[in-house]
Length: 345
Image (cartoon, rainbow, N blue to C red):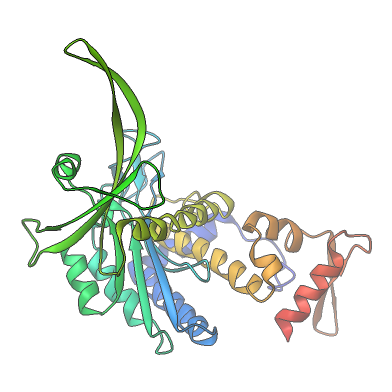
């Protein structure tokens, strides 16, 4: 109220009505603004290469939300949900782009158009892009697009008969690694325009005791991981690079759990889209501000909120200036003042 010079609080129904009135056009305009905002930020940071981690997340909903539908939902099978698509900049921990989608959308639905939109706003100072994603994005059309953009990529393989295919390959041991072996082979899916080299790694999960013609034998049970990539290096190298994407799942949880993205809902799909984008924007603003002090950048958003937003302070207005008067014994007062000076520098 003080910052906006309001005489009384907003009514939540008024906010809901205003957001609904923005409609689909408003949701598109907000996304364009946020993409332009992120582009400006990328052009200001000292980066010439970028790692993009693509992922999706299921948000279960209850009630009569427009656009909610049944789809893959590991938490609540058969429940209605939304299924947003996200692209993270791993070096910066920010969301580059996100699409709010119905729950029936498959993980990679629209991924080519999503990547085209994302690529269009990446500034010229980014010379190299590396795309990384899980098996939900194993898609020949996507690989064609990434190769056309001259992006490097690493995507986990998803095939119905993958284990059967892998057991037929010729495996060789990895020097210096116990119980680990690798293989490489050419593969062409039905919808692909050309073959691609797949590289796989297997590790012994456990030994199973079995009896064969009266003899007790112990045979290995394997755990497989297979990748499609235009990076140089063997399967073990790809496996180690792929494991680094696990941090994006942590960031998704911060967006969902700590910023409550997707939890404030209306009965209108485009209004929910706008609310989702605003939550993602709040997450990005938090990360962008803290990036200037690496000690704070490593903190989760919830910690940032407790230290710098939920303050024991009083807003004082005087001379058309609003000042936050902090409690003098506030434990994080010194670092709060330091943080403010860095932001204003």
